[in-house]
Image (cartoon, rainbow, N blue to C red):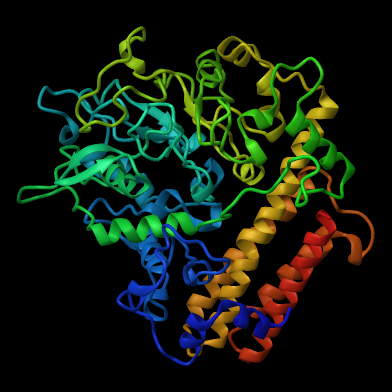
Amino acid sequence: MNSQKHLRSIGKMFLLLLSGVFLTLANLSNLPNPLNSVPPFRLGQLLSTASAEVATGFPAVFDDLVTQGEDLFFNETFAGNGRTCGTCHPATENFTLTADFIATLAPDDPLFVAEFIPALMFGALENLDAQGRPQRFENPALMRAFGLITENQDGMGDMERRFNMRSIPHNIGLSASILTPADGLTPPDDRTGWSGDGAPIGTIDGIPATGRLENFLLGAIVQHYPLTLRRSFAGPNPDFRSPTQAELDALAAFLLDLGRQQDPVLLAGAADELILKDAGAEAGKVLFRDGVAGGTTSCAACHINAGANADVTGSTPANRNFDTGIEQFLQNRLNDPTVTVVGEPRPVDGGFGTNPAGDFTTLLAQPGFENENFGDLTFNTPSVIEAADTPPFFHNNAIATLEDSIRFYNSIEFQQASDMAIPFNEVQVAQVANFLRVINALDNIDNRILRQADRALLALAHQPTPNAVIDRILLIMISDVDDISTVLNDGGLHNSGGLPVNAIKRLDQANKRLQQAMNTSASVTARTHHVEVAEAELLAVRGLLRY
């Protein structure tokens, strides 16, 4: 695809960039608010990309609100223990963490501060509270084995025994995934995190919070960034600093910019219904949408259009919480080494709480539940569009494979918690899994790689752009292309025949071109051509996957 066509589609804003006029935040004051307006292409969509390992470099080249947020996300420690948002949400890992990726990190990576900062090391002398009790900041064994992070949604009054071990949720597609339903349970004003109450409520260091996405960083700093477990913003030796309102706004803009801005259409007979070319995956789509004989619900009952929204009352679809029994599934298997590190504490995770974040020191227990598991045992519905390349699954990483995550919805735990079942047979499980794989591949192409290609072409056209900036874009593109190949191969999909009709071979060709584009000794013209050819290959792959 011709790069000039892309540049024309970007519009006058980018022509200013290409003529060497740098946009500043002041220039953006008259533009549509990125939190409320999502045109087909926005500056941040085309430019925001980063690696957790290296500074983005973009603020030195381009200046817009989303890119400011990206820079903060990957590079700002807020004067804490060295962690950033990108520590747990690296771009090349689909903004989540797995045990395999964790195993590749250096021993002094900020993820492991609980292993080398004495005040954060469970049981170290510097770690004890005023009563001499050890305080749990992380559980390194569970982190390294299962990619789990310690969370204190139920308050920080007893950090030895009251905590949850949760997986790292990706933060892709949030603009379509966090709408709070009209269920009376507000605040939180946005449904964030695994239990929908991840953003704090109250006043934190003078900043009012109502559980909105832009408040989420406040909670993340208090939970994950401290130098000591005093978790103090004040005094001669503060544990971190507060973000400014401008920083909160920029981070929210970046997060809302990541991934798709709307869900695909699965409604039968709709003019824009997504129809897949693989017969098994298309059959899986119908099963996902309509359910199966003998079942009492369908996947789409909670995941309209495979997203995070449900319509259970006939009102506007929104991001709801449900008790699926997945926490009980874990608690029934605490002696299973494939699910947890046997012997390591795993208190019951109560999910959504009646006082979900409070002031981080107190929380009221939900009547009828024991003290350790404040909450109503419901968890927030995630989108499943990203599922195929973000395993393991659920808030506790209790299920490792895509097929097993589908089988869970016919498990005893699910049936007991919900009084429902989705009894797919094994052929149907495979079909639904392959449907999820194909829509994940399409999402990677449409909402990640093609956007990255636009960024790369624009960066190449705007010289001199540092090669490190261009290379980071290309590396993330390569990582996402690899993801598609892995996801399709896992289902035996689109890997037969010669090059024109073999999606895997075309993906290989795209990656070769992207690797050639990283050759900094080549001319800008040659590097641009390689990106354009890679983009054409990806568009061809999209045409092989769907009608």
